Every structure is written in C-alpha cells, then in structure tokens.
Image (cartoon, rainbow, N blue to C red; front, top):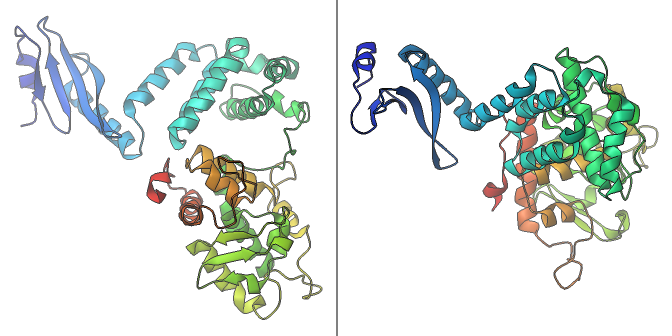
Length: 407
C-alpha cells in the first residue's frame, strides 16, 4: 500500500533500521536515531542499486515521488540516475568559477550518455590526465591558443600523437560548448589547426560525433541535386568504401538478391578483392538507383559521359553544397566515421572493422586473412551499423552497443 503523509510523519524509530515501502522502488528508511531517509531501489544493467533522495521532512513524500518519477524517466533513456547524480555533483564543485574543468565535465555529462562505457572512460581519463592538471583551474574564457598548444605539446612530447589529436579535438568541442552556453566568446582550439603533425597516413576531414552524424544524414536526405549523386551520398556511409571504389562501382559486381557487392582486386587500393555485405538500407538505395543506371556499366556514371564513372569531385562537391566545408567532411571521411563509431560506440571487434575497411588484417601467425574472413560477423555488423544510422537520422537515442546483437 502506498505511503501517506501521516504514515511517514508517525513512523517511530526501532532498535534496527527498517523500511516503509511506497511504490516503484521508492521507500523510507527509518534509522534507530530517528532519521528518515528517502531511497529508491532500481536495477541498471542487471545490477540492483540504490539512490538517495534526501531526508524527511526536508524532502516531503510528494517531492520524493517527483524525484522517483524523474529517476525512472532517466532510466528509460538508458542512463544510470546514480551515475548522473555523481557527475552532476562533480561538475557543481567547480561550476561557480566557470573553469575549463567545470565546462568540460558539463560537456562530458551532456554527451557521454550516448557513448559506450568503454569510450566514456577513455575520454574522461584523457581529460583528467592530460588536460585538467594544466587547464582545469583556468577560467574557460581566459585560455589562449598558446596555452592550449603548450598543454597539447606535452602529450605529443611523450610520443602519444594520436592522443594529442584527440585531446585537441575534445578541447575544441568543449570550447564550442562554452560559447554556446555563454561562458566564452571564442574557440582557441580553432587557431591550432595544423599545429600538430598528422598521424600516420594523414587525416581526412570526418564527422564522428553521433549527434553531428545524424545532422549530416538528414542533410543528405534533403539533397536536391541529381538522383545519381543523392544515391551515392546515401550509399557512402552505409558501405564506407573508398571514394574511388564507390564511384567506379559496376553493376556486374553487385548481387542485390544475395545482398553482396564483390569488388574485384583490380578496383581495390591494396589489390585484394573485398566483399561488402549490403544492409537492407543499402539494398533499398540500389533498388532506387537501378531503374536509372542499371542498364549501363556503372552504378554512378558521369552525367556528361555515361561510359565513364562520375567525377572524383562529385561527392565532395555535393557535401560542399550541403554546407560542409572541406575541413569538416569529405567523401573519404565516411570511413573514419564508421571506424570510430563501430569501435568506440558500438564496440564491434576491431578485426571485423579493419577487414571491412579493406585494411590488411593478419592472423596470430602473421598471415593475412582472405577476403571471406569474418564474413558472417561483418554481415551482422553492417546491418547493425545501418540500423544505428537510421536511429541517428531520426534523432532517437542510439543504443550504446549492438555488438551483443551480432554475437
């Protein structure tokens, strides 16, 4: 039976603590000292947990129920309300000063709910180890580019170039968040573009933040140019092949019924054939494209000359018309997008991802796997990836991990 104000007010202490249950996990714990503590019992990821709501009468029965409803709403979104409370408490400690650490923790709290736990831990560890010791106490609006660069150089100096790039990227997002929340007027990280040497293989501009990926996908859906270009834009994130492999794709290599695209070795950068499992969404794009170009050689022929593939500048040109600058997103950037999110958000096996990217993957004996390696797992991964993109496109909360579904 749910509690009443009278029952709560008249609850007397006993020799040992005892509970008075309300509903949906909310209960009042009465201590031998006479203290009356509101608690919520809930489960998260299969583990039973407790959340404190305060002391009666400071927190009334009605207020405790309001907090229970809010905690259940957070749980329905896949977030642990206990962890959310801890992060908010940490942010509050430094919030008054608008320090870099305060803004960074607030930014982290806002975005980490969409990330896999493993990725959240990596980001927070980098912030706490590489940025907060030197920048954390500084007012976010007072940090200059030279100060940020000095901090980033410390990371580079120990040989962690990739971590340096990532920390610079996190800093840029944090400063943009500070600007959006009226706590800074400029982003000093933007002045450091090109200050770090590229990591091995160089960088292609790419969008890897899930929220921004959703915005890009919606922009592509609204593309008003040629059908062939629009289909190429839609297929690029679903297959994440190299731009040259996409624009020279031939219908004879595509089996819509089998949902496979078999790219021959001569079309591949590494001269090794690749099987691209086609998700349901990719097949839908091809079925839309087939009446337009299916009688010809190429999926994406040149407008001026159907006997040739589309120009290597077509995809990038379309992205520019959608408002994405060359330092924001490129046709090649769909590969980095998939590589980052499949690993850090969806937590698929790195071997599956690298093989699907047509990178050389070796077995424990140092021998390269053939093109059919991990095909079953890659097929499931490609469908999960397409489903995840659909969720981002529709602004639904993307699941933290699809790996279990494909296991």
